[in-house]
Length: 225
Image 1 (cartoon, helix red, strand yellow):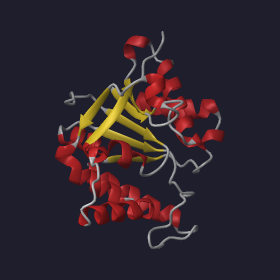
Image 2 (cartoon, one colour):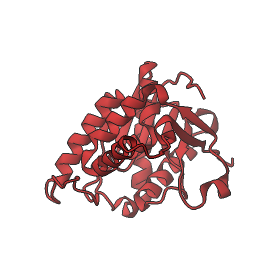
Image 3 (cartoon, rainbow, N blue to C red):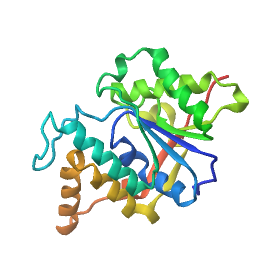
Image 4 (cartoon, one colour):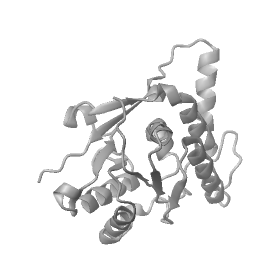
């Protein structure tokens, strides 16, 4: 699917690297088109299980390391408007629902996006992912139907295809694959082991699908009203 011009794209994910795995190529393509992109990252991922491979972070240093990694990843994607929203990792699910909806509503009111990229509620694995998805959907639901931004959502859990079907579309990001790789590499504390394994498999000539680097699947979130 070729991307259409957008007024403004708002990306809302809870953790640094959520955007790199799911949407780095799509974001880079939008930026190459001149579309403004704002990334609202809710936490610094300070409870991330990985500390580098070999370890170079500690529990105390990880928040600042992940903050810098996030800034570097955004540079690779061309994002110039990064919002670090200051919530605590692994506690987003416990935040007051109305507080979360207001956080998203305030961003929408300020930016007037035509498109929001986030997780699909019910199909996002992590409780922080689910809480983020619920807040985005509820904030948009409260907007008059004709004024709502579209939501394209990332889904990958709970038998997604069996329950909600194949992705609505897949963005071909092969032309910016190197930018996606740079964004992933920027999150070294969490991704170093994976990137090293990828390189090793290629060097050893072992078959490996690169479809996850070349295509980014999304579902259009459809409201019932």
